[in-house]
Length: 119
Length: 109
Image (cartoon, rainbow over all chains, first blue to last red; front, side, top):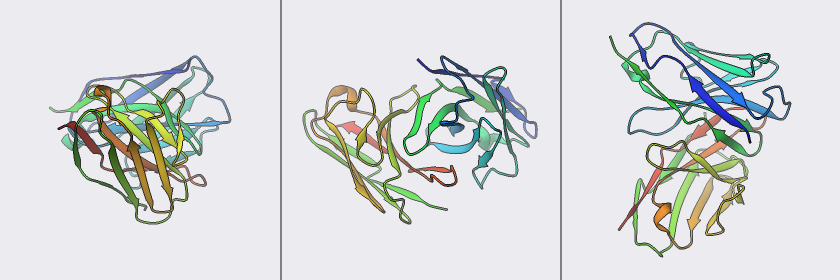
């Protein structure tokens, strides 16, 4: 059974870079059938897609975040990562990683990790 | 950019009753639409994909319909565990971008 787990600091200072890693277990991140993605949810609000990556390294970003987002993949560790630069309090959210199945959707999801931006 | 609009924002329903949730796309997304259920403190769970196909393990009381710009999620007889927030999401097969609606909260009446 495929599982995803987010990891990284729970507190980031304003103007710094948020860095998270998603570790995939129970399956290979190098499968040609899937993309891998990051989604976030500010407290009490809805879901926002951040971006996606293919195992080959091709990336797709939300236009509203594109200038600050970098998603990368490390197939040797079965992980993919998110970097969000110049963060502000508006970036405080639960960050989820998930597998993206074309023509299907996001399944499964990681449990999510809360990242708070505060000095 | 495609905008997804869900209605209503909150739906109050009694257990055993039917719930009908709507999702509208600002332009056609064909059948590239998924529905998710999210309970407090949990990650979202895929319910429906391809506008009308139930994901693995999803009960038959959940059904999806629609194509183009108008979509509906129906819960035929609400169970206690169905009270949650539901999101629709469109996906673009040719350029893997994904947009969520703002969500509909289904609460106990």
